[in-house]
Image (tube, rainbow, N blue to C red):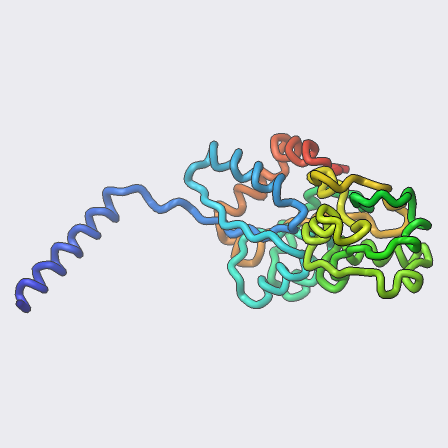
Length: 252
């Protein structure tokens, strides 16, 4: 029995050695953490990229930028981080968790108020007459932070006490609006363009909030990943930018 077991193990080891030398190397893996509002555009980009670079495989993680930054800080695998605000990118830079030299502005966006309500909502001054309004949790969701900036600057934050429904990310806020659980939600224009029932009721005046900026950078581990370095370079190409434009992102 002992001899048979040793013979079996020897055969397995020989097969493994043969497979290692005879088969091509495993596809290079790239862990990508990106803001939830980028989901459709990033999925199209990675599909297009892998069609030309079949040796690259993506593991994608979408969510609120603050939540993603926290995950990276706690050791979650990530080679490339694309945030919906400079705040969370700066947070990781201060922690030495991203390669500052690789940082680029990926895209820009606009904040809108969207909903399926029949109530008249044409501007910020109409918000006080609504019952429920969804925004992303300002502490972790950039869209919520931008929305709170706008509400405070417009002098509406106190008037809306008890009316705000917090979402875990911008997509959850849009879902509330789609389901009619709120009168409307503060979301990005690109998200509202994906909606089936909710429509853009008004665009938030840009002087009320900081510009919605999407910075991208390699993480400290991604800076050593050739796949990640090649992909972040491709994300600056005309091909990638045309996809962003298709989904309604602002490029300048």
